[in-house]
Image 1 (spheres, one colour):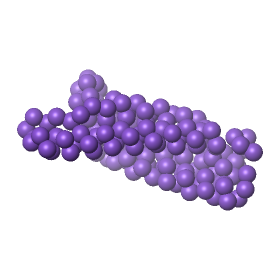
Image 2: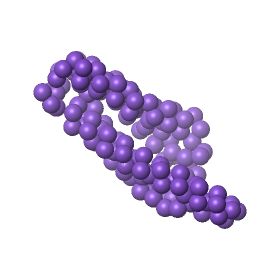
Image 3: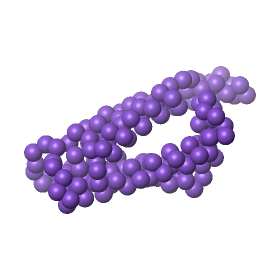
Image 4: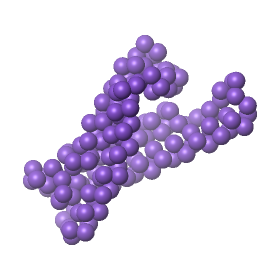
Length: 150
């Protein structure tokens, strides 16, 4: 693989990791909002805080793994599954807050649909990363992991 392609894979990994590093850190520092979303999605309210911390830890660790290029093929598959799960479980239905005007609920529903499509798109990017691998500028390459595409 050319050095230009390896550099582009590194840039892609940086971009793909940033959101999960920031989101995971945010959930670990303040899990209340995520715990509320988890409970509102139908999960047991007593488990919601633990699930929020678990999601935060997964996002942070997975994001850091992508950033440094460690076990990227495995992490790519896991993040693709996570993105699809959250797309359909948390962003797959319209928003209806009874106290809000109809226009506000429509706007929130549009944002939710955008979030769903963003997660599906990210799943595709992570599947591609799982297929291509971490590239030459990664811990995987330093460990001698076999490149996905030669």
